[in-house]
Amino acid sequence: QVQLVESGGGLVQAGGSLRLSCTASGSIFSINNMGWYRRAPGKQRELVATIISGGSTNYADSVKGRFTISRDNAKNTVYLQMNSLKPEDTAVYYCNADTERRNGVVSRYWGQGTQVTVSS
Image (tube, rainbow, N blue to C red):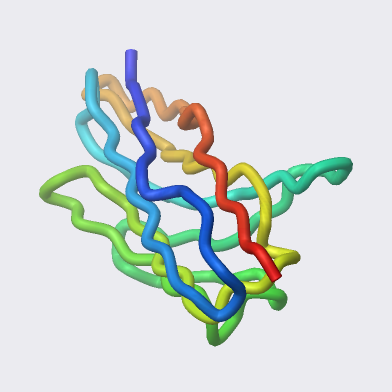
């Protein structure tokens, strides 16, 4: 079993910054993709950013130039640096990780979510 623990959410004024962290632990041989998603009130969950093990990244258009995803493979941790935050960034943010066991089985796990609230 694998656990993902997120931290770093909170309340910030528009234009401010937050940094989210997510650490994976448990039965992990390697981690392929890691990513961040978010769900705003009354909306469906949407992709924010992803990063593969080699470091290539992908961003939603709405966050390009403001958010940066990174990872520390030695710590099984993915980060999301969020700058120039807007009220529309308010959401619960979830991390995920595609983890591989020694037997080659790959599974996707999700964190519990962390609330980000941006006030205007």
